[in-house]
Length: 234
Ligand code: SAM
Image 1 (tube, rainbow, N blue to C red):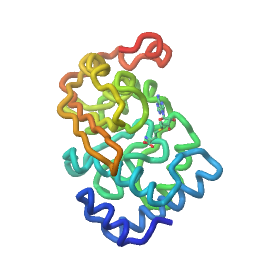
Image 2: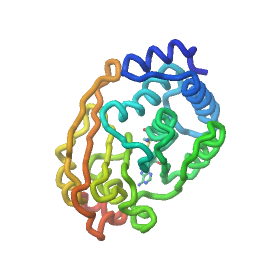
Image 3: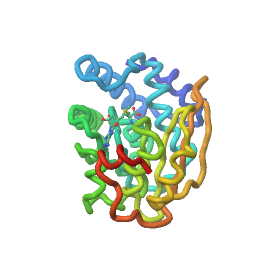
Image 4: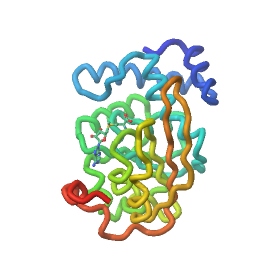
């Protein structure tokens, strides 16, 4: 489905990654299954192979360029959709333990099938982040929490920061128009502090990665219910 190995290898190289043939093979199978499944179940608007390569696979992997993820770290992907960014991260870094969370069960079913095809180990959770983050099995238990294209910074912080361990990390991937400042109060209320904002271009599109470190425990009242969050965002 993807253009050949050499093309993909060169595209990855432009962004500083070495791609092995095994990794290419996994991305190729991923693209193939994504496009076929997407004919019946809405997963993504991006279906051209070269765009999948750039806007889903390489974009997801760019976290690794900016953020140091120590070996065997645990990572939860909140609102993972069709597996972005966590499944490409797992292809590049099989040592990372991934947990895939989404509120839409049809996406979790897709991911279970996909990970079966790719022989990838993962934990799958169908549920809303604001409910799952109250469960002590998951609350403050991950080294990394990441999210791409899920919600504005204030809401996203309330959905994600409760999952991060003390001294853990919250990584948010954002487009150019995102207002980060409006999320600052939420980040500090939830126990985080912005460590750094990385700005980069994906061809002509500008993107940001916001790296938040958890500097204190999240107060137990957060996350609130989705109706409370909507009524009174932080
Ligand atoms: N992260 C993926 C990506 O970058 O392609 C998917 C982005 S998609 C625009 C947003 C996803 O977040 C959807 O799959 C949606 O079901 C999920 N989502 C939205 N709110 C959520 C919540 N409160 N808890 C869990 N998942 C949620």
